[in-house]
Image (tube, rainbow, N blue to C red; front, top):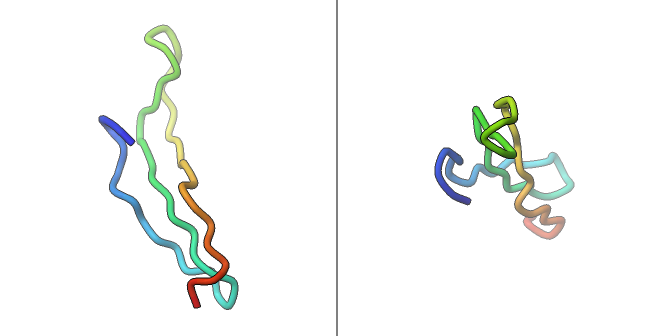
Amino acid sequence: MGDGWSRTHHYEVSGAGRIDYQYHNAYKVSEASDAHAVVAIMTINYSSH
């Protein structure tokens, strides 16, 4: 997604599918805002099994 974002990770949901996500340990909306850890859901796939 850009600087500071992780590679895409895959989380297997038992019997339901897969969730692909990325995270950022210090995301800021603007230069004046506080940094926070953020997880971004990229896709939810119900047919991965």
